[in-house]
Image (cartoon, rainbow, N blue to C red; front, top):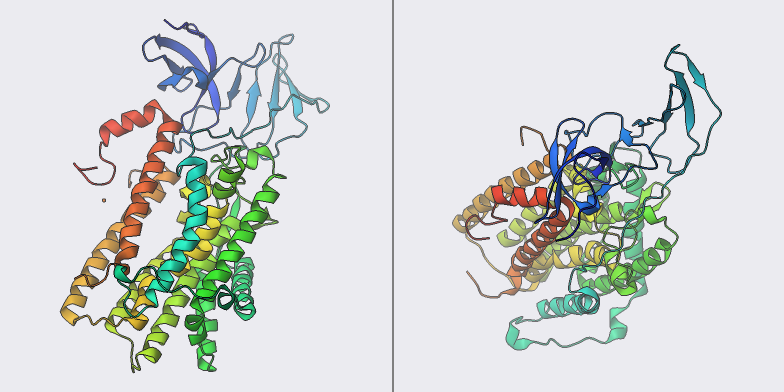
Length: 508
């Protein structure tokens, strides 16, 4: 039987579940079978902790935070005005130390309080031993480990271009696979690269505009909260105004459709260059700014991203790429396809199918930009680093794959009757209400877990988005399940007992 490290009644430091903070706790009991300690916090809370979540006090003193663990947000890390108190016996006096969690290394000002006379005497600054917060390397790799991410990085660009080439065929059925491959020289055009770079940096300029509110992200491991400018919706309005002005002055957007493959290649090359830059700069980042998904393997970390929040000054590269160039670009590409359909099919107005595709996907993008603050609590921001996975996904996969239905309709007309359209609209609105309510509730819960206010087929290609997104969401749920189980331990197992089904009740 394994020996226990801590005795009953011993006062130690216990980690609060879901955070990196340690509070003073008393050992109540130990279960030899599960190897879990039952501990009691200062506020009376009793929890079961693993042995590696319990530490001995520093030296002969106990380090406790001024106050008990907050229950308004379990993963909350104390703000910069949080105080820590060291109680030391020294000739009947108490020495208190006050410091800010925001600076990671600084002088700590000591104040000696005479317990008898009640006088406050300020001493000279004294250097205390500091501890660097580091992010441990991850051993359980996702996406099939190094072989899996290598296959993804090599296969996704190939898969993207095969889909686009298939869609340009007169008959895009699987019987006509593989499609004729174009000359590589024809896929590269300098002017297209210039237009793409102009688009990217125009969105970067909109991001830097001092409009919109500033929100704080979730606490980092060192207690800091990064600030984010929420002006994505304003960027969308400005982009719409620019596109509208261009159409008014006769700018031919058909150029984008006619060079769609070239734009996809330009975006792919740009995402690879950006990924290389992100990986190289991550080696200069402090250890406490690395991603929790960081593994120490060069190939895997290039894919998943080493640095959690790479910034150039106040310009957050990951946050910018999440919504701006790709998501707004998706809407612009859909508009291009609508105009291209009218030109290719010699229509006086777009088809009802094209209108529905544009409208529904526009609603999704506008919803994401309007609720931009909810992005700050997603896995992409708080867990995944910024590497090839998000760079390629945000800049290439989203605009060129998510606009696939509109691209398909340009050369493959499909008529939808009004009764069928009415059913589609009703289904869409129903789905949107569920989507918005679920995401709003999830975001509200992550902000405050105790908030009381708180599931006709001619070609398969047009349905690729539905199939892909279903698989994506199931996979993301599995990742969430793994992360939560690892992060919360026994508390998560108790939660799963109360909520036994992950997505589909009584099924999964």
